[in-house]
Amino acid sequence: GPVAETFRDIQGAVTEEFVRSTQGVFQFELSGDGGGTWYIDLKSQGGSAGFGQPPVTADVVMSMSSADFVKMFT
Figure 1 (cartoon, rainbow, N blue to C red):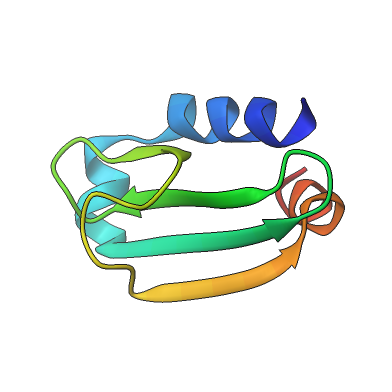
Figure 2 (figure 1 turned 135 degrees about the vertical axis):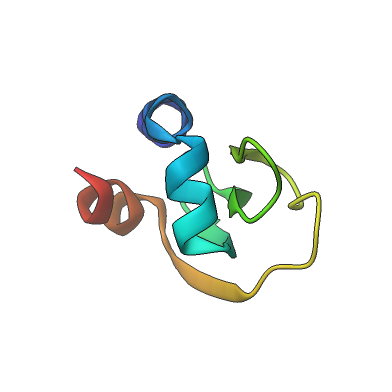
């Protein structure tokens, strides 16, 4: 779905330099189609993004609809 596709795009755009400069972990609690807990880890080496709990404690937790999430990142 659109949420999973957006996270695949984010994962593909993450670089080691971006991780070094950001140093943050973002958790998204999404409601609606494709909802659930998703994360973007821009703190751990290599970075990662995906479904479920982040591998380390989130620095920021945001709750929104999955439609708003997709709009925010497109």
